[in-house]
Amino acid sequence: MHLGLEDNTKEDIYMYFESSTAFIDSVSTLPVATLPLQEGSSSTSSSLPSVLVHCHSGMSRSVTICMAYLMWKGKSLIEAFEMVKSTRQQASPNAGFMEQLCEWEKELTGRDWNTLDLEKYQMDRFSSVEEVRVKVMGEGGGGDEKMMDCEDEGKDDREDETKVFE
Image (cartoon, rainbow, N blue to C red; front, side, top):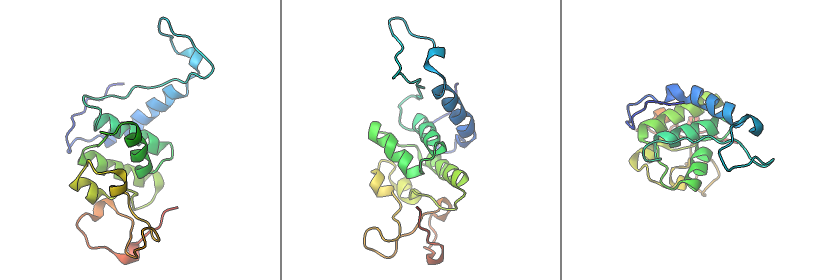
């Protein structure tokens, strides 16, 4: 599968989330015996099919698709970001892609809030996972934690819309 995407904040990568996650899942669920073996390799019962997702720098486009897949498999946005960052430290989707991942999280969960603070991420996309993790009520000792909505950028905090995720 080839996606002709530019690493541009205006690029619509969201339109590929469903097809790319379905493709990755279809390959990753194939029985190993049905996959062609490379010369000199052997199949073992512990072998699992894999999919190579890549882009020019391995920082934004491919990372976004991998995160979309992890979210489709049940991870939250922040969990997917953490998983990808733990294996590829330079992982940092551009701000436009991260905003689209926020929308994907909302679509997948049916919630109107996200687990990643998009405003903080947009200020520094190379922040650590902890710096962009949304604080939940009861964490950190403060009483003003909230769940961040992608569309809340620049808006005043609304205490009546504070959410707690499970």
